[in-house]
Figure 1 (tube, rainbow, N blue to C red):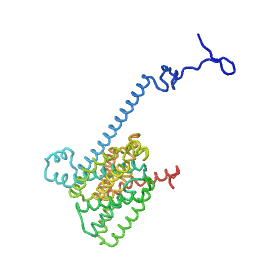
Figure 2: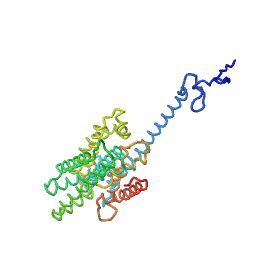
Figure 3: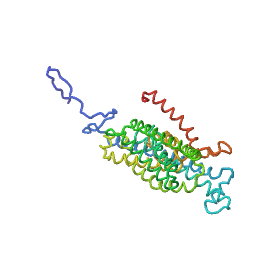
Figure 4: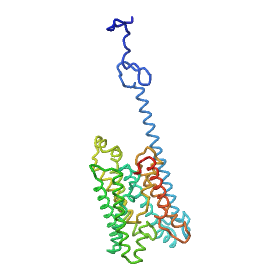
Length: 385
């Protein structure tokens, strides 16, 4: 029998429906499950989450595999094509220890160190740019924009043209210059925290000052030395040998894994300092570790091939376009950088017959239009200043 209650005015009213009888989607819920979905709905939500994660992992593996295939194809093309065309089968036989004397000399002494150097330089710049842009949440934050590459270049030019250093000593000086410049930019941009745009502006200012130092040293030097320095400052792999490769290889073996390990805190730091602190991240320690690794990678790559322009700047956006929703996409960014430098170096060698261009000219042809587009887009949405 239905019971009725009497209100203060004396009118009879029906009792209210039991709370939680109907869920947010209109489906009936069991009495007593206030605000909670049924076990079946919870199971469906978990299943959907698992499917989304599987699709993301599959897409990530597919894109990374495709980029690795592009890198291998560009690498093989660099070893087989030139003034002396060598079939791929002969190249593989030479790498395995066979081949005649002429083929071994061309492949092992001329082409292989240059191709390996291009691969490592691109990978180091790509990963460095991805860490900078992901950590500072700013598409302009790359080592060649915020002055890190300029610091390595200034130190290398001073060491080579004033002190006469070369080889491993020159690489060490360039790395030191990059680290000191990165530390100066960080300290000057610090205001109870780091703002991406403030750090970029400070870095641009320091980079401009260091470029002035480089120009002054070049004007006071011999014409031949200044010409060689200018070629190196453009970013070039011409004439590179095993002597230039081994210091970069030794540093990359240490720094690439360290950068990936340090970047495990990157997703939390991308949420902001307060949210990252709430999630248990050690904000300053983790940020400094990532910035130090990214700066060192850029310094090593600059010491080996000069400040190859825009590789660190454009590689992360390309990787993020290929993998939307995958965060900073560190490994894909490194693969994009390697593919970009290998392809650009191949174009630099064969674009004009009989002339080998610096690889930095080709990468600048790609990066400069992207920078202009990014600045124009920032102005349209009111962030350009």
